[in-house]
Length: 68
Length: 323
Image (cartoon, rainbow over all chains, first blue to last red; front, side, top):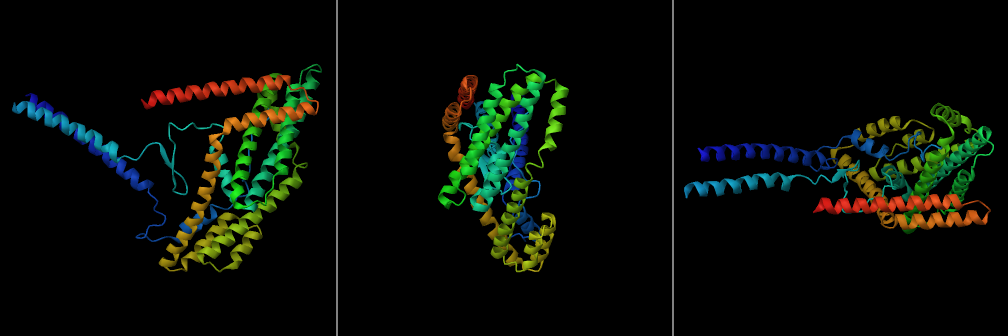
């Protein structure tokens, strides 16, 4: 009886852990720099976006807070 | 006996599967920035609340003289705008109550004026080695200006009801546009120069030869339209050329990130010490000019004590948490 309970708890923990593992691996992949991957094609859109993200838009300004 | 063995085996298995996800999981104290650069926020590191995330992003462009010029002029404009607003608020307070004690508010405005003078005195044409220092000074001045605005706001609000504050805020928002027009025009021009310089550099590095794109930017085309033009140019490149271009862009972005990180991290180390030194210098200068600084000095001391206490509490909590 005890054996079965231990086995059951073990399997449950294994299942939970594997799920956690999977999500952490997925997160790692999502967070990995994929912009310049040797095996992935680079889109012109992406490079253009990267370049223009360095340019200052009209609305760019410096805020130091209200006086009242 | 057999039962005991199974139990030990299961415990070990449980331990293993519990630890595995922790080992594989990415450190939660890291974030991925736009540049895909992973920045660590070490819990044991004393974070300086006064260097905000936006300050860090803003200094990135200061690695070039043109970028530094833009930021410093924008900061000057913001402080000057606040001085004008502050003067009007003081006048309104005195309108309401002639005998109101506004010496502390005037002292704060005096300090803001000193910050403007400091910004104006900064040398933009510095070498790369000292452009880090320039960026650090920018963050310090901005942090001081933000803190002064808060001190002023907290005190000024005690003279006005909520609806009056809101009305006054709205009224002052647009009031000084004309007075700040020249500065605004200058900033606009500098931004255009900075953008042209950056785009030109990226075009050279990535091999885009369509000079009409640069001309369109200089003529005031929107950045979103420029992005479309660039994307079109990249479409005519081979896959290999595009990869090469993406790497060149990445290289440039990494340079900016290193500059940003270098500037801010070094500043964080001695931020509080430098702030106290700067505050004392301003108080001394204003006293020499005849400002009444007693109240302000007390206020500064009180705030410094509060900050010290907060920092100690934070360090204590962090030590407790890391045990």
